Length: 313
Image (cartoon, rainbow, N blue to C red; front, side, top):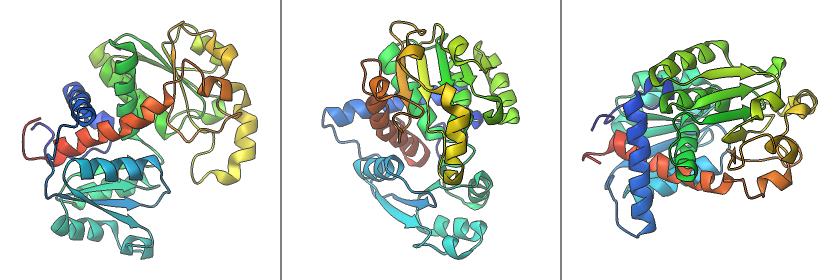
C-alpha cells in the first residue's frame, strides 16, 4: 500500500524500493494475464485519460490495462474537454477529482502535469510530457530484467537526442543501479539540472550517470543500446535540421558490433528506419523492441493498481 493515492510524475520522486515494487507487481500482473487469471483489482474504478498529444501505445495500453483491472477508462482529447478551450488546469483537476478515481495525462507542458497533481485529490499519472516519460522508462527496466536477469551494474547506453526519454531513463537507471551513458551531440544535450539530479540518485545505488559525445566510445561494452526518434512531437519543423545534426548518432550494425555479444537493442517507438536506427538492427536478433512495447501494458497496470487500488499487491 506504499504508493496508494500518490502521483507518478517523475521517477526521481520515487524511492528505490518503490521502483522495485512497481516492477515486481508488473511481473505478477503479466503472469496473471498470460495465465488467464482474473486480476480485477480496480473493479468499479474510473480513469480519466487526458490527451493533448497523439498516441498509439499510451492510449491503447492504458485503456486496455484499466479494463483488464476491472475499471473503466474515459478518453478526453483537447476537442473533448474544456482544457482545449482554455479552462485552467486547476479547475479541471478539482472537477475530475469529484468524478473519477485517477487521471492519466499525456501533454506537452510538464508544468501543467505538476499543476494538475497539485490541485487534484486523486492520483495523477504522467503519460508523457516534453520533459519526462516515466512510464516508458520503468517499462524499459522491466524489459532489461526479463532479458538480462540481474541488471544492477549493467551498462545502458542511450544514443541520440537528449530528450524526455533520456531524462527518464537517467532517473530509472539510477534507481535500479544501472550505469547509464547518455551519448548526445553538443546541440542536443539533456537538461543539465536533470543530469545533476540523476547523478545524485545514482549515488544511492552505487552506479553512474555520465555524458559522452562519441557513439563509438559509448557503445563499447554496452549491455543495452537504446535510441529514440530524432524529432519528437512538436518538433516536426526542425526535422531536416535534426537529421543533419544527429546523422552520426544512428544505431546500426557497425555500432552494435562494439557492444557486448549479448547486448539488447531498445527503442520506445515509433521508429524511423534509416534515421535513428537501421532496419537491420530494429528487426535483428538483438532487438527486444516489441517485447518492450508489450511491457508498457504490464508496467502501467502495476502503476494504476498500486496508486488506485484498495488492497495489497
